Amino acid sequence: MSRPSPVCVSVSKVIAAQPRTLYALISDITRMVDYSPETVSTRWLGGATGPHVGARFEGTNRIGRARLGRASRPPAS
Image (cartoon, rainbow, N blue to C red):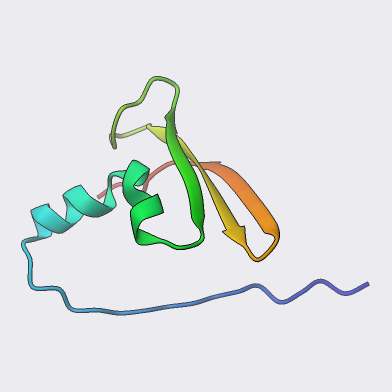
């Protein structure tokens, strides 16, 4: 049985805003459900309440009937 090809999508958009404003929006992983139609839930792990070095979060996405969950760390900025 062969494995399906990985899905890779890339979108670019120029946004007229200060970098600090954009960072505040995209670094709050609890808001991803507002931005992404496939994101079902997100939450900080281990007592974290926001992005910082070493913070971890868990996110769950739904693509069709499949639900995918994973714990991650935000990249350093």
